[in-house]
Figure 1 (cartoon, rainbow, N blue to C red):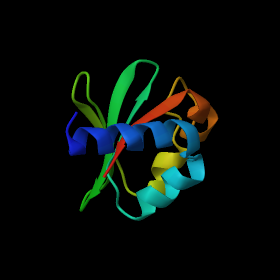
Figure 2 (figure 1 turned 90 degrees about the horizontal axis):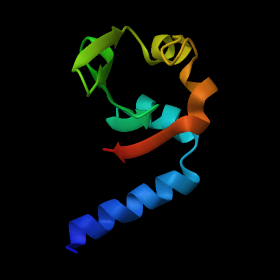
Figure 3 (figure 1 turned 90 degrees about the vertical axis):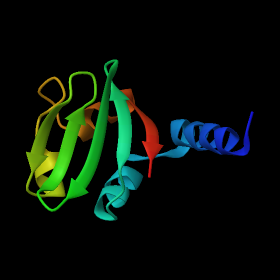
Figure 4 (figure 1 turned 180 degrees about the vertical axis):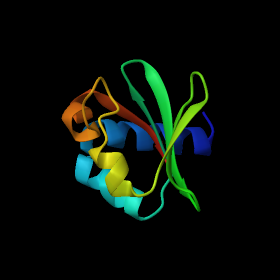
Amino acid sequence: MGTMETYELKIKEEFDVEYSYNDFVEDLKLGSEIEFTYNNINYFLFYDERGTILVKLDDKTKQIFRSIQEFLSSKLFQSKRIYEVWDDISINTVL
């Protein structure tokens, strides 16, 4: 296993154990790009000049939110906010 693969595996293991909802929110505020899985669906979340953008990777659909707060308060996951389903989310990558 190469150095980069080992590093990525280590990060994933750390996220599975220690990455909290508060860490997630802080990373969003810092402009991080986050890939996560919920209910066997992969999502990619990032920020650009249009706002906070959530892409469902399986079918490439996207939703644009004017702010991080609008995203966090939206009921996107089986009519629940992300914090309500946090325990069922797996963080794959934070860049």
